[in-house]
Length: 515
Image (cartoon, rainbow, N blue to C red):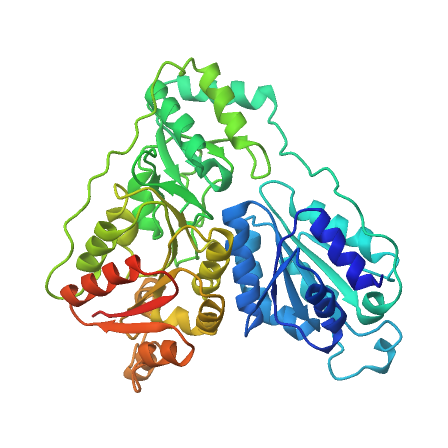
């Protein structure tokens, strides 16, 4: 058994079932090993950023890591933008990065690069397999690190000779790490703050946005009157009928300031104290008022559900029944297709148990609020701000949950970053409905242009944010990659296309032309 085969079996023994791959010459022995195995699913992607985004989406929905297979430093670099998002989402991901054979590196061949330096910013754990004998144990270490709750990015660099040389036996199934429990003092301190009568916010993020965690949080709200908010950008949130409500912290600082007006105390659960997404002239970076009392009940890697349950007990809030959302659907939009009409239609037709992958940006901003009382669904957000996560993450979510409809809301500009995703959707026949919000501009940049106080805005400046001349034709792009596509220019057309797409299985795309 060579190193690649022993490494692969180690990964399989420890729960890895999927690999999103864009391999090259240095990874051929790993490709061959996957070809011999019926225990792992290999999914070919046409760009490394699709691989990493898909692994992110898969990890968010399963809570366990998929692999990416990447070609040396340039392949890792292409994957880095969505690895950044995965790291910020605390998604479990394992990167297998091929490298030149150890004895070949001294010749400085064209693809030689400093993979370690490239990997560090987007990795929580990083190791180079020095030999084929070391490769199985290194793979086991990568799995363990990726499974540190709620998830981490592991990167294992595999020199070609470590893959092809004779190796040792695969590592058997190993115990995985459990989430750490918060100390009693953290629970007691949180309870004291919430009982002292001062205006307070409990801010939830990451694993604290599960269905059970939100139920516990609602009991605490009823017992104490604390205001409940979630992070602005969320890895995954349970929403819709039968779930408990939570308000999201606004993206723009003035939105957040209105939400937190008069607040003196903050209790963080599975997240940190909030800060502005960007710096703006003469505006504070911290979103909490100066002099606020900040207390962390549970860090990101802690068991947030356990912490919330203990806080419920400490506050004697067990007697309160969690207040569940009652389904109330908006009427579908009519007439011109705009932010409001599209969001109403999106929520009205949203199927039960759907997975929504949101990179709708400005044009899709109302889809979240207007679907709060729709059918049960999970919502996946852009955690790291690196554009082009949506289409790949939809792939990962669909591979993870083949029995659930995935709906991907995507701005037209952002979609072009990883448009190759459509080909993989068609190849794998994934049940994804992509809605392209085609306003033919980088609208968020036009908004930010004025917010940062930029002067002398000219026609040339605005051209840098305009996607016309020529207009992108997403119907032709999608059909060229094997995805059924249509274009909607009013609400009635969109409603029919959306309803039809939800009834059918397999990938589809709707280009919604908006102002």
